[in-house]
Image 1 (cartoon, rainbow, N blue to C red):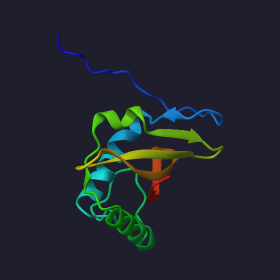
Image 2 (cartoon, rainbow, N blue to C red):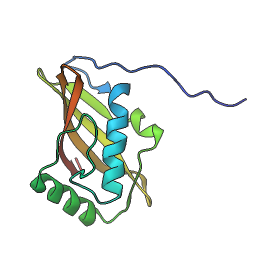
Image 3 (cartoon, helix red, strand yellow):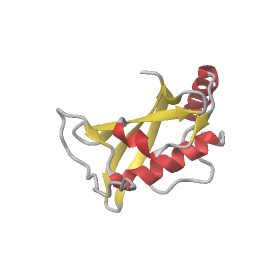
Length: 132
């Protein structure tokens, strides 16, 4: 019998004490961000709905960190949501998305971002890519 994919929606939780899973509504934007990075588009020149433009300085940091890491980024698999987390920091969520590479699968690299509430839903600001 085929294993059914979980369709349980994960909602944003404002808990300053416990890390939470990344909310379902944010996941498509993070997938699109990482797809742009896979294509070496660290400035997100095509734009991603709900994501602020990436500064030249931040894009340079991400490009250099990914290049120095020495592995090829790949699109986020569904299982990244089992280990990626967010935590409410009083005015916004801090988010860590585990990044995946061709050679390693889940790598040591993470995408750090913040998510703020807006009247239209949410807004993501990319902070950096690094090894915590």
